[in-house]
Length: 112
Image (cartoon, rainbow, N blue to C red):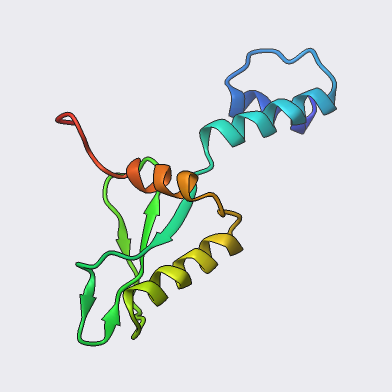
């Protein structure tokens, strides 16, 4: 059996693949997009500030909580929010609703 098919079987948990390599690659790509890519965005929180300034935070889609960076932005809240907006845009996130949904996915509701 060829290595690509063996890898595809392992990744997808398929016993036998009876399709072209292109179809297999398309299936693997679809699987990766749905199952393994975790999107992350920057945000600033008024409570994550110290004497050095705002501490940018990172929300990872579907993970409970968030990560604080080890650097600071010594600026106003509005300027810090604009810096987050720029960083998110550089990663392909420009829709505020999409960014909000990623951040909201990190919060635990309903006793979980």
